[in-house]
Image (tube, rainbow, N blue to C red; front, side, top):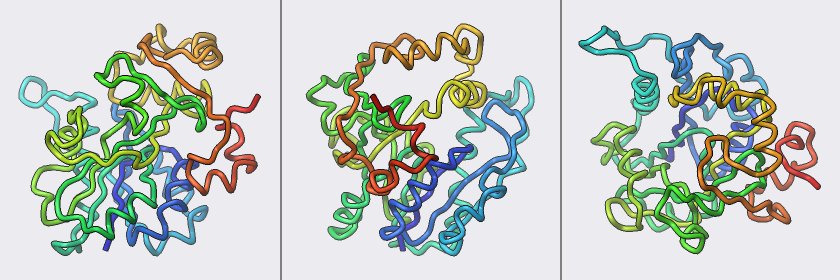
Length: 284
């Protein structure tokens, strides 16, 4: 059995892409959703409210709803958004109670979509250790690829086989650290083979999508509270950065708008003209 496990906020359109893209490779989808943002504000269970949209996948979905949290006490155990994020990610294990030792587990966020061909090839060879999946990264639009991150140690050439490595795949019997700890080790593996083996060209990470409103919603919800202020939430400024291809936070990033969609998920290619995805794609 293959369990695709990921935390989820409100990214319904990305969820649709993920479920369709991986349906033939995955046996169970484990969706971890909380009724609070990482910044501790109440939110709806968006998947629960929209589950009929995904009716064909419901027999394969394990939906873990979190509404009880650790007790945060000043000085002893003070609250931070990162603690809520780690708690949500570590709650992946709640969806794995029926796992057998040799079952395969994917640990990621909903916007990190593994390439099903790469995943199937890896499964065919046998997953007997912990791997990280190195993914291409896209920002603002599904076809706006990040090709250089000046804050990383990767050159443009090195980034050609992916720039984002956070997703883990492993046999259940090796899930001895918390899911979040495994993710952090993979994220810090700067070169293939240092800690865990990193598989190149293994998927797509899509972030800061959906226009100004969605980006502001993200800034008000995720763990980076340093960006939840008017210096970063100006609608005019965000729109300007999207239009000019600049980073929201002043980082040294370079983007490339894809000429076609043939390197993107097949489900997206087949549904690019669907109104629900049209606004996510940049067109000249």
